[in-house]
Length: 88
Image (tube, rainbow, N blue to C red; front, side):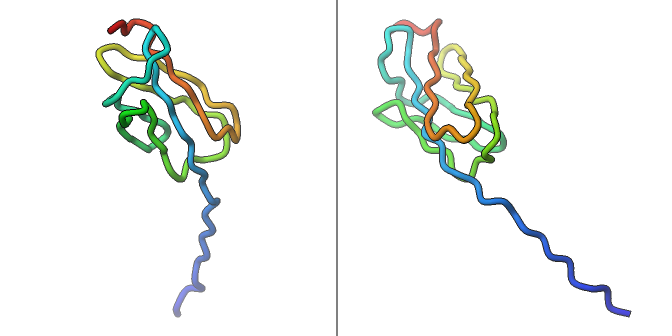
């Protein structure tokens, strides 16, 4: 006998823009950013867009010669992570 097909419905994710700044509030180019199972590297403006993130609250981490983290509020579309130890 052939089993009935299994339907799997995935919830749509949403993009989140992450901005990484140093202790003086200046954009950090080249920072590695992680959230859930997503990864990206910031551009000249210190920003990266991570696609398809779940809508619930989650941790966002950034690393560049130091580390920083922020918690994204549920459904927030932007997050700023400050690398407080980073002075340039």
